[in-house]
Image (cartoon, rainbow, N blue to C red; front, side, top):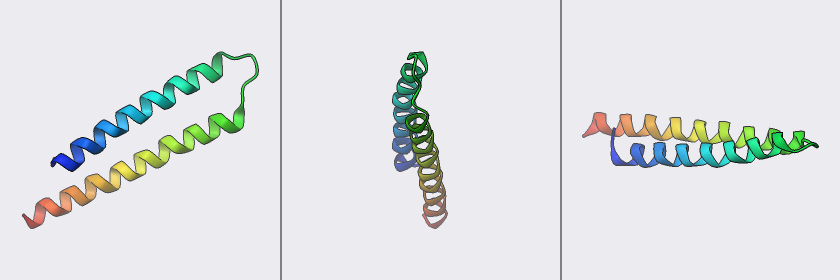
Length: 65
């Protein structure tokens, strides 16, 4: 994997950690905010999709090197 992919994976881990902390906090509260949980989950999915695209671009670029 190239440097771009490594950086992308690191960002993915950091974002998932931050979202996980927020979700855990929201779940502990007596009044859950379903719309906020839904948005955070959607953000995590979006990050995953972007990371996957970066990895594919990385692999494609490696083929041309």
